[in-house]
Image (cartoon, rainbow, N blue to C red):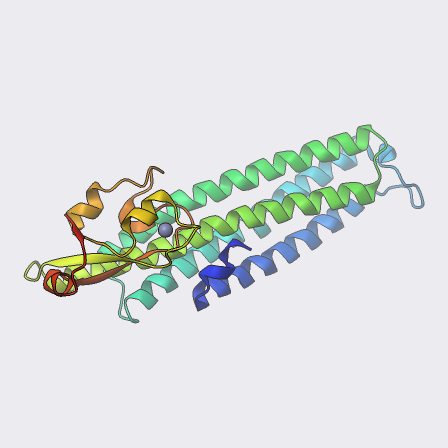
Length: 255
Ligand SMILES: [Zn+2]
């Protein structure tokens, strides 16, 4: 899964959370689909047309919503807040951080809701197709499991992005608060420098930006650079340091 090389205990825990949600969802939906098998020994779905198919589709919709979407939103929230707390070294979240984390979560949950709505309609179409053609139930079950797997993998990207964004936001807010307008801070763009770097990351990695430099920077993805750095699934983080320290270390500063 995409998160594997981002590692870190919080990202790992989120991967485990989502895997257990996927397993539960998969199990529940398989059970619902078995109701289509109205004629034991019969390998087609044609007999299950109509009312049963509609009930099964509704049951799957509900499972996607509760076991999938709602559960994943919970993971998103818990892990993002955990990541902000870890970035702050366990002190309470300042109100400014909580507000920004909530804004991040709001945009990410919308993405996840879209993913699950797409998946629900794909599954509904698959059931309709399976019951009007003579598709086998096992093919339908396999197809639906594939849709669930893909949705959870796509949701994983939103969870990863919100965990990273909450951590970056917390670091910047905490550093700003500690500097209290007295010390000039810059933020070193830290993280891997490799062939997977996006152009934005390749340009910025190893350089430091002032807060206004961050505010003016554009990752070309319509996502705020302070929280999302180079964009969705970016592996880079902001490391605060004093302007004087950056100058001493001859780090290029982008104002
Ligand atoms: Zn990056």
